[in-house]
Length: 161
Image (cartoon, rainbow, N blue to C red):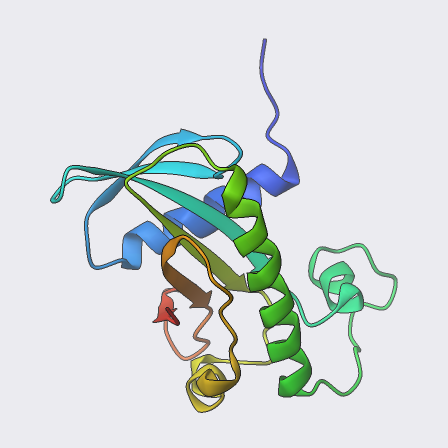
């Protein structure tokens, strides 16, 4: 029996593979599941890492456009970066609550794919002080961005915790 991966699973795998290819330590995927999304193995430190993957969209309308679920494929309207930071803070808060349910791993990382093509690493560098981190068990929090100036896409990593 062939198993068809859901869109969510495909997007998560896309993000984790791009993250692993650009991370400074060699990692391999042990398992794709839930809570956390992935169990990775750090070959150098011989550790099991729980990795949670999520996507940051400016709003629901942008998500529909980017996922091909909107009749309005070309226009979104004015997008303010401070609103995206607010969404990011909500997302981090939500994921910090979810980590309480995770199985044991040596450490946990959160990987946030910034799906919005409007904003880049420069914006996050500039407004890094506005990112809020509640108490949490994540050892590292990363954002992965598409740098349109590079040939290889989804290679821009920024560690925000």
